[in-house]
Length: 376
Image 1 (cartoon, one colour):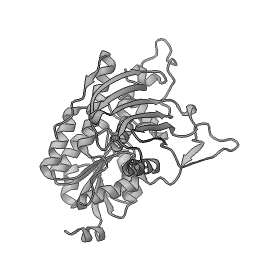
Image 2: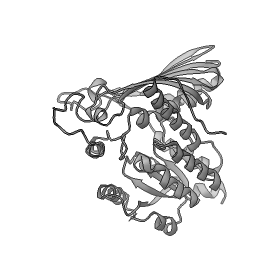
Image 3: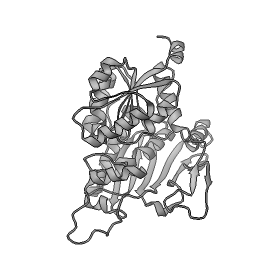
Image 4: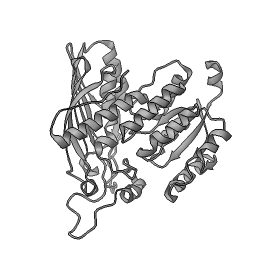
């Protein structure tokens, strides 16, 4: 089918589970290049999974099937959106790739590098596109990329990213009384769904490096022309949240990255509580080149709202002109057409997963750890 025909005929898109967040599926739905036709998941999932899937299907007035293979066979799909628990991303995505379907997968790609490799192999074998959710199309990042591509900074030599995410994660550290049972990770994630602070949905507990690390690492990759990380040194801690302490995962971390082309980068990341910041968090990039430097505030443009009886957990500063979901869907469509490279494909996300896993190993051993990038 020609590209011009594709523009007239939207890609028929299935949603393979929507138990984490619905922002991906709604971003795709906002773009006329895609038509949502069904939601599907495996029958043996727990009841809360089916409830969330059914609610989304009802909202968009599309069917929900508790049989992924039936959805593939019945609805003549072109693409799927995968937003399951993190440990299930790759399994569902591999099944879709083997059915010849293009993929839009939630982050993190996986908690295991072997699963990432299984997915990238399936993508290569079946010739499909796979976009992994990121925030590279936020207005500030678009502008930063334009400045970087203009050559005004010269050769990039160093980048630092602060990525402090101002959301709560249940009771504060130190609140558990003697004799109280530890907080169950999955139970905490289920109750957190109401306010959207359940980024680590899954049976396997995940710290902030695994949950959110893909965002700043994708920024660094974007602004260094795709340079890969070779070695890392990291420190992690649990400073804010009892759920993280009870489950042995980090809520704050620092990482130093030695990259290709002589680039040095560093990252500070953490979930620092809703009361700590007036918007989504203190998220900035500092970029140094041999001819100039710049500082990027990821939240800009934004406006502030202050009023009497304002809810304490409401962000006082809110982003505007943000079309990240729509623009990611557009990038996905153009990649399927063969007209544009993906801003973050599964191969890049796989190497980011390897970087995160190396950082976690470094934090345990206190040593510099090499990153197991996949051969190109």
